[in-house]
Image 1: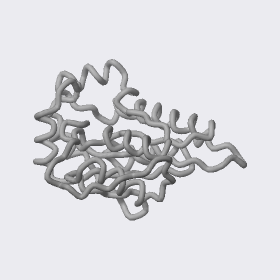
Image 2: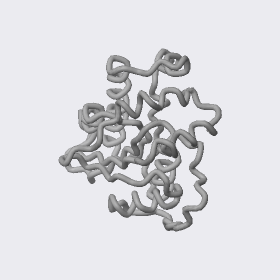
Image 3: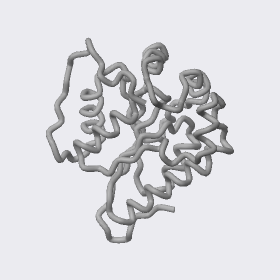
Length: 196
């Protein structure tokens, strides 16, 4: 399924992963702004049926996730065929899900926003306007599979401010920047609170 054209300049594809409330969208948007990578939100690829299911508090299972993941991998492949690098916010909770996403390009790197469940619960409690209820966090935590040694996954502390996470991701993955990335060391406040 890989969409890279023979002889074309290699593209980079990054998936910012983690459970709902980890700050995936905020960090992925920040990476896109800093590097010029094309941003996408995996939630926007869900079918209306999946959205309705989650909104009602019913977690997705593998049957409902496979078509969604294949659509995302197809989007990555299409952008790669256009010579465009991408950054995507996507839960990518299981190794098998990440393997599907890897089918979209020759190289897909993952950034896992990981940390204490209580930090994420607090964010979800304050988040408004998202169809994913806080009650589904436990099912996501139960589904989450840590990266295996052969996977390209950069694990970052979800407790850090979003600016620090963006800077760490850009540096850790060796991404070229189109604008300066500022590292903030102040951990007293976290503007990512409430981000998905």
